[in-house]
Each structure stands twice: as structure tokens, then as C-alpha cells.
Image (tube, rainbow, N blue to C red; front, side):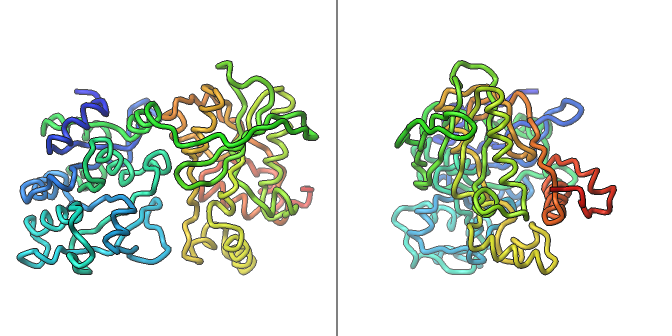
Length: 422
């Protein structure tokens, strides 16, 4: 069975009007076999024909959607299907459209191809589309896979790197049972149809080698009660958000280095809230790094409330008082349960010279993707913060619904009262 192709090989085929297969970054299951969550057939929109649409529907098993740069969709005055609401995995799903020049209802392969090409045509404007229709655009986040490692962003990145319009057609590949195809099936699919195949992880690595999306704006020395840290202020070139890195000791010598990627929590970090464990985690991270004599804390200010901001976070607190858990409270407000990304933070670590990290976190999903930025996660180091009667339900939700590795056995044994907790 063939292995994955290089990004350069994929770009060559896209430039020549061919389809490629793009899959989630490589992961390994318990048996040591590679497995991925999803594979997509990708084709730059300006080359799409009725034949290619028909191929996607029949061979991939789903009709194509269109991934496009946010600026392109803004030019066409296309909007989210549900305002201010993200779709599954944070996807930005727009109102479906038809090109006004289609011959039929818009559902045929010919009509879909016409609509897709018009979405990519720089001469098209808002007047060239009717809503609703049968072609659904997806909006890519600025910064692409360095901001969000999704197929939408990856497809648009590939179009840009191929020097073509930042609009692509993509169709999810199903296996014979109608399930999302895993790696072995996707590799065989690509071989059978003589298509190039690449991973989002390799695309991230390619962009990491060729681009830099952060700028160092300031640095200084800051004495703290945990020791004297060198503080670096970075600015994201994607969205202008600041990233503050506090480094203790020598961190650029290639050795394994303790790292905490900390999402800002005004209520927990500063105001002493007992409703979460964020302040305790930050405090313990400083203590562990100080004891080791070396390490880095990246403080991400705009991650407040898992990305929803302080005002929405306080609204979510009130819903939790009414019985909602931390996940359902966000959803009840029409907000994602977690909209954070760590791609730019990973670039900060790389720019500081870190290559091998001991990751201070209870959240296994934080480590996903770091290796695509040239950083090896040697070990996930848990942060054990004693629960209290105010945050035990919050911690259980993080464990049971968000996959955090938390051990709350002592509280389970006393009925969750945590009377012993401070």
C-alpha cells in the first residue's frame, strides 16, 4: 500500500486541475494502527466540472461543499446559516446558494459545477447568486491550518499555495458501510483512483517550514514570587491577539522542557473564584517550573471562558447556578463548548527554541497538533488541584464530557461533597 504524498506533489496536481485526497492528521489507535477521523476529496473550484461533481457524489459518497476564504465570502455577501453559531467541530457553515445562471433547480451535477465555479470567479458578485440553493459554502478561518486544523482551512490553504483562487470543492469520503473512511481505506481509495493523498498534519508542517505568523513585539525581565522570568510579548499576525510567554532558565537547548499553555481566566486567575480550577493550575504550573529551574508558560488572554469571553462566561455561570453543566451552559447561550485553538501558541514555543516539551495539562486534546509544528510532546504531566464543593461538578464535567484526565476518587467516595477540600 502506498504512503502519503508530499504537499508539493499535491499542489502540482491541484494546479493541473486534478483532485486530491486530504485526511486528518495521523493518529495511532491502541493497536498501533494509523487511524484518522475523516478524509475529503479536494479540487480547486475554478477547475470543477459536471464530471468531477458526479465523481465526488458517486465515489466519495457525498455531494461537494465549497471551502472558501472569509474575504471571498464577505465580497459575495454570504452569511452564516445560523448567525453567531458554529457548526460541528467549529465549522462555519454558510447559507447554501445557487448561481443564478443555472439551467435547472441547482441540484444536478451540471448546476452544482456552475455554482461552484461562479463562487471562485473573481468577476462574480452578490447579484450572481440566489439563496437558498444546493451548494453549501464553508468559511475558512484567517490563518488557515495554523489557526484551525480543519479540512475547510486546509483546502483553502492548498488553493492559496497552488497560486489559485482560495475556493475549493470538497466531498467527505465514506467507506462501503457509509461510515467515515479510516486511513487504510483512504490510502486504498487514492491508489485505486490514482489520486495523490496528503495529511493536514503534513500541510501544517509545510506551512510551518515556510511561514511565520507571529511577531515578537517586546521582551523584558520580570521578577515574580516564583523566580525571575524572561517575559516575551508576541502578536498574532492572523488576528492581532497577544500571546505572553514567561520563560525560566535556558529553554532553547533542545532539552525536555516543562510547558504550560494557559487559557486566561480572569475569575480564577485574578479574582479568586472557586467555581473552577484555573487559578490553582496556573499557580501549580509556576511552582513546578520554579522547582525544575526551567520551563515556559504561554498565557493566552483571548481564551477566556474557553473562547467565549468574560461577559458570556458570567452568563454561563448563572446558567450553571440553575442546573446546567459547563458544556450545556455554553450551548444554551448559542456558543461552542470550546472554541480555543493552540496553533499560534505552538509557534511561540517554536520561536523560543523549544523542540521537546513536558506538557503541563489535564486536557489530552491540547497536545494534538503540536508535533506538526516541529514540537515533540515527550510526556503529558497532570496538574493535580484539590477540588472543592463549588467546582466538583465542573471538574466532573471536564472529566466525563471533555476527556480531561482528572482523578476525583476521594470526592466520589464522600458523595461528591468534598468536605475535606480547601
